[in-house]
Amino acid sequence: MWKRATSSLKSLLSFHITQEGSKLNNAFHCHRFISGSPLHFQEKDVVSPKHMDSVITFVLGGPGSGKGTQCARIVETFGFKHLSAGDLLRKEMVSDSEYGAMILETIREGRIVPSAVTVRLILREMQYGDNRKFLIDGFPRSEENRIAFEHITGTEPDFVLFFDCPEEEMVKRVLSRNQGRIDDNIDTIKKRLKVFEALNLPVIDHYARRGRLHRINAVGTEDEIFEQVRPVFAACEQTAA
Ligand SMILES: Nc1ncnc2c1ncn2[C@@H]1O[C@H](COP(=O)(O)OP(=O)(O)O)[C@@H](O)[C@H]1O
Ligand SMILES: O=c1ccn([C@@H]2O[C@H](COP(=O)(O)OP(=O)(O)O)[C@@H](O)[C@H]2O)c(=O)[nH]1
Ligand SMILES: [Mg+2]
Image (tube, rainbow, N blue to C red; front, side, top):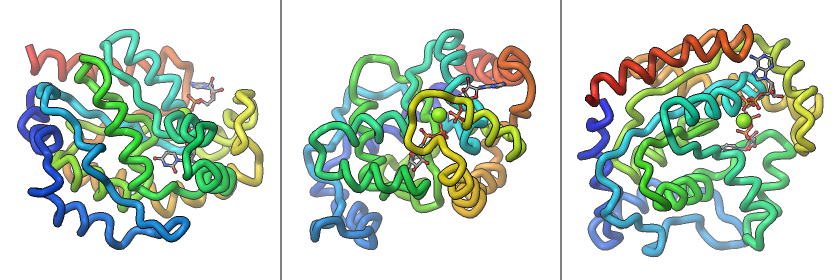
């Protein structure tokens, strides 16, 4: 399983704007415009061809379902590189980025940041270091996100985890998260739950149909939940061995 993404990631890594430009344009032409400039990928975003043996895992679930918490356990036990799309966006937000204000407003309103911004941040992060096992947390959050990522990388995730959690439990967890996040308030959480149902569930359904989804019951102690997660990764390690 680890090896499966290798050939498909090659297209990402050996990607040339001249060869693939039309593909990219198709993916991003329809994108929103910010300050009059289209959000599109540029040659500087091309990832170098050193990244060959890769595995890509998406970690999905509603706000407060425990994605970040379980990702930390997966990193500890299976040595993945954790890429939290939300963390990358928050980092971008407080940098000098031209997208800072837009990201802040989008997160506050519980909406989804345009794919071109998020995908670029994720791909950029994937270039750093030698760890080729990626845990992409909180992305894709919409079909548009998913299609943009798959289009530009030419690959699908090896597998997808879905932390399935009742709304009541998610609200309780988010409201006691205590990390000073601008979206951890009851108004935003209500909006986020609606966005989750309307935009993220179709992505989850898509991967279920593709046979790549592992549904995890996200109610229980952290340990109990990790015991459902562990065999998914253990099985993949065995396949790779
Ligand atoms: N199994 C669990 N039971 C109770 N609280 C949890 C559990 N897992 C995580 N939490 C807490 O819930 C909050 C949200 O968890 P987090 O991992 O940030 O979720 P997500 O990344 O899906 O939004 C955090 O304060 C975390 O400590
Ligand atoms: O791919 C992503 C990931 C996050 N976000 C934004 O960032 C917020 C926080 O995301 P994060 O994954 O950090 O939240 P969590 O689910 O962990 O509470 C979301 O509500 C969105 O507004 C986004 O637009 N695209
Ligand atoms: Mg999180």
